[in-house]
Image 1 (tube, helix red, strand yellow):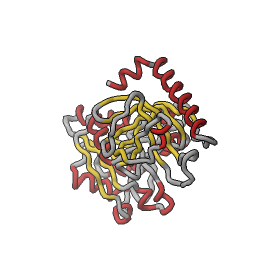
Image 2 (tube, helix red, strand yellow; image 1 turned 120 degrees about the horizontal axis):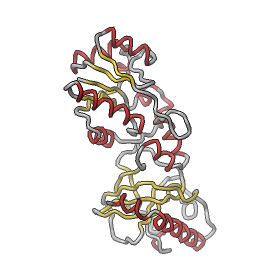
Image 3 (cartoon, one colour; image 1 turned 90 degrees about the vertical axis):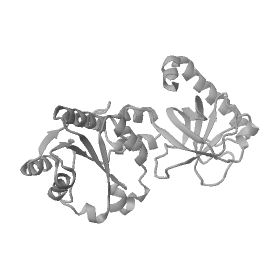
Image 4 (cartoon, helix red, strand yellow; image 1 turned 180 degrees about the vertical axis):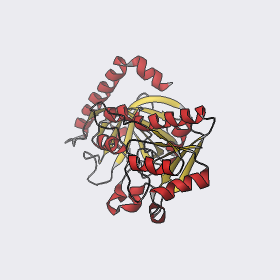
Length: 304
């Protein structure tokens, strides 16, 4: 068994290099590939301040992405305080004894035990146990720093969905169910689908208006999504995800919806009147339609 260990949040381009090498190494050896991952996130268990940590992928999304990349087996280990106490050697022995590991892949910053060994020390420990070790290189972002789930979360929180996509290797999306809203958008010609996430731990991009792709009722459409507190029509602190779907006005309450973020249009703003809001939404729609017109071939391929 050829094994890679990690949380793999987002299954970003750095993770994909590891997985590609994992699958290839298993094929060359006539063996099977296994990803060892965890749930919940280690930081949620070990750091009180990390209880607000939000993730790039749900467990189901992550598992499907890994399978799509050709991984044979995915083992989800419950991450508890007792589990976190295992040393690097104990963890590696567990892989050998419980899963038949013969070869391990190590990323440039892979750490797998409570003794917090660096990747070189982990490699030496693995080799001392008779494991074959395959090392993977750092994958740099366009700005030169290492691609990481933390940096991607920071970009999404700042509203930079295009920057996040460049490190993820795909456009970021949210998945949920359409719930009832206050229907104010309908009164000014911009009905919206209000989303409730299936996974509350999923990270929501920063407040603002975005050009998005929408998948619902078996159709692929475009629209614009507002994330935020709706300051023009609400004085509350509740954060909402509302999407106006272009050329679509069907009743989809209670149905599945997936929103994929393609480009940020602007920050969320409070307007003095609903008429001012309507004027701005008309401009936002024009900006989105212009993006479609300028990128029609690429966007049409994304809808297929």
